[in-house]
Length: 179
Image (cartoon, rainbow, N blue to C red; front, side, top):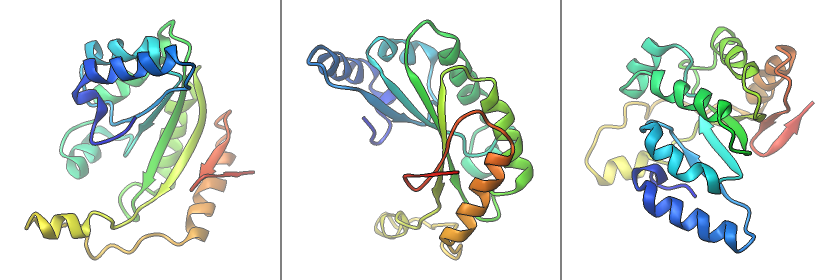
């Protein structure tokens, strides 16, 4: 399940995930994890895979770029990792050129990820401007309209850097594993 934010309706999301599991359907959720742990607990028994973004590991930088710090997000990831619920965690890093693609940020993100027992992989997602038309339609300013998405070679370069940090899990770029 993704959305919007599926955890903005945790009871509905839990109900769907429960029905899927009872039918033998593998379940996954894609979330920002900017929610109460009470909401998260409602879905954990029915979840096989958690996809969660770490947009920037530094709380102040996260606040500047996203509009809130990342303390709740990181705490929720840790709490799920420490739970008894058997699920896999996949951390995604949406790479925004000049914002979060520095080696320093990526190395610090890997250090956080190394502590996660349930982590199965780290995935780098390329920045895209798909929201540009939506913002135009909503008559809102798209502050990153002049930002050029990274070319594939730059993403692979960052993925190789991540593998050199010995994360203990595979690194994926746009769906493909990187060795």
